Amino acid sequence: MPQEVDLTRYIPSMAEVDGAVQPVLIPERRWYDALLSGEGDDPIERWNSKVFQDLNSPTASIDCWTWTASLSEDGYGEFSLGGQKARAHHILWALEHGSPPAYVYGPNGWEKVHLGHLCHDRDENCEGGPQCLHRRCVNPEHLALQSHSANVRSGLSGEHQRRKTECPSGHAYALHGFTYTDPAGKTRRYCRPCKSGQRAAQFVGSRKSMEVAA
Ligand SMILES: [Zn+2]
Ligand SMILES: [Zn+2]
Ligand SMILES: [Zn+2]
Image (tube, rainbow, N blue to C red; front, side, top):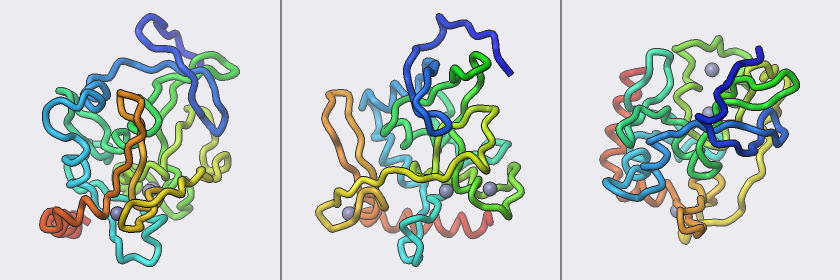
């Protein structure tokens, strides 16, 4: 449904929604400012310590990355940053793509847009709802902006351009890590397996708590 939107409260931009670049409106988000500011603790380190990825899985390169910390009532991961509770799956995606928009301008005017889980859309057997494990997935490769009206199950193939660069240990960033542009415009790379190797004990803890929760 088209919405009345107070345009002064948003930053106009362009973003890929439902697979096509379209005009969008981005709200101010304190967590996004905090993410980029580099002040305080290292939010990415803190975020990463709450993510479980089974690197021994034969399908590790395409598996979900599961949030092991607190969940919202509707089953999405929550991450406190900048004095706000952010959706955990927004954090890494935002580093790569920018702050997630709230509205997209479609054929019927402004309508709501959300960062949807392609892994859920691809799983014909998942009934969705707060128990859907895909909602806990924070793998940015599994996420895409979706308009409220788009038929997500049929409309998106989930094909994403894969980056081919590797970390010094040979992990493909596209599969196990990510690249992003820092506030100075410099391209930064982050390898999750290498980072998590430094904090193996915490990862074991995360896995344990996830098994209990499942
Ligand atoms: Zn996923
Ligand atoms: Zn699901
Ligand atoms: Zn690595």
